Amino acid sequence: MKKLIYIVVVVLILGAVGFKLMSNKEQMAANAAVASIKSDAIPVTITEVASAKLDKSFTAQGNFAPIQSLTLLSETQGQIQRVLKRKGDKVKAGDLLVQVESNTMSADLATAQTNAEKAKRDLERFENLAAGDAITKRQLEEARLAAKSTEAQLVAARQRLNKTRITAPISGEINEIYVEVGSYLNMGTKLYDIVNVDKLKLQVKASESEVLLISKGDKVKVKAAAGAGQEYEGIVTAIAAQADPSLKFDVEIEVKNAANNNLRAGMYGTASFEVDDQRDAMLLPREAIVGSIQNPSVYVVNNGVANMRQVKVGVVTQDKVEILDGVKPGEKVVQSGQINLREGIKVSVL
Image 1 (cartoon, helix red, strand yellow):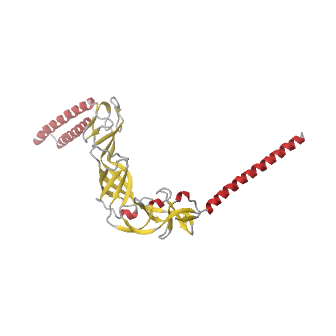
Image 2 (image 1 turned 60 degrees about the vertical axis):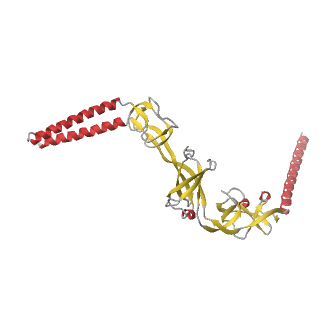
Image 3 (image 1 turned 120 degrees about the vertical axis):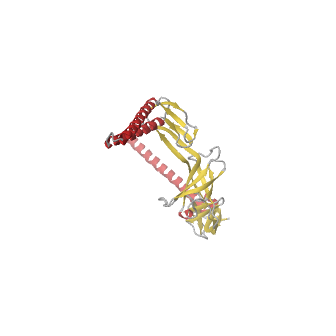
């Protein structure tokens, strides 16, 4: 029995040694492959970071917001008798939206009107009596106060009746409806969301250097990402006086919608600010950028070796990218061939 155990132990040890040797062999092969790659120079084309004149015009992105939007709340109590406008309907300011049961309010108004008319007649009678010193001044003053009080009650009753006819406070489109015929309203019940998109606000952000080039009233060309290239004219209506934590300034642009209101609130838009001036900038071909514009890098070549370096970009044109930080004028940057590169790999310039 002991002999059998010894044999099993020996077999296990030999198996472990063999597995280790095989793993080492695979690791050595992988290291050899990497070494062979590093030893072979990767052919690339390079470009040089160059200073050039760049147009100060710039673009900024943001989202469209409605020029007006509100949630309409009930200012009365009672059961809804009619709903005249529903989701998707266009309305004008003053259009009737909902009719609330008004019998009680009408009765209150009739009572208030009767009381006001009686108080007015009483006041006239008391004034005639006062002219002949038939009543005291105090009695006359009480009649005047009663007339004013009943008149105020009449105005309040008339307003309560008017509020049973719920109308649109602004022009726009019904974006959401929250009530139905038969619903009982209380004060503050949510009725409608109304959005006016005849005009929209495009809210974008500008850097500290860009915001100095903008003034209120400037005309701006605006495009919507989903607008099939259609261009709209916008006007700068507001510029923030203080930067946000990222040192960007809010800029608000008012845009007139097309006749069919094809621009919608929430869409993504781009504003083009045309500036008739130029400035010095460091430029690289756009194809030299590795990764996205939001997280850009380049390969800098020094003594035949490529090293990846993070950069900060500014204005992006169709074929050029402004480099704000990360490289210096005169440095050699890989323009094409980056797909085969890794940090520290040797390169040969085509």
